[in-house]
Length: 162
Image (tube, rainbow, N blue to C red):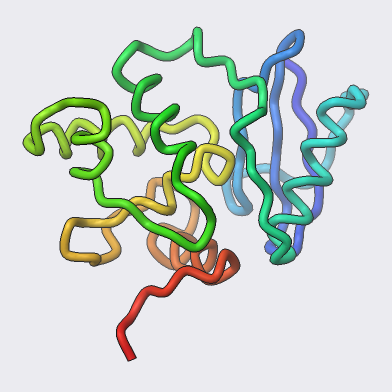
């Protein structure tokens, strides 16, 4: 599967694709070394530019990207598609996603598990999902909660009452 790494304001990220769909995205620290031997198609290069712009503070909407949703089970796919609705600078709870999907609040743990396996962190903005009480819970991406907080800060999220 082709993949390419690229520099961003927060470090080296990675995109992988097959044919005309995105199969994965990696944040800095996921083991990518910054080298890429793959020729990058124009559509992937455009996504790289959008990610660089987003991480420089110019918010991007990634809902139009060609995610390989056919490679994930139905429930995670529903969760990822719902998570795409969360705009930069805002947060939802795991329970909010469960309710939006028509599931009981008790499904929030399953929502968390699905987001923990998100193959497209940042692009499918799992970092915008927090605990019901607003606490920062685990983030499966490299750097954990620290990375989650950094991404939310870039997007201008109000995280604390002043």
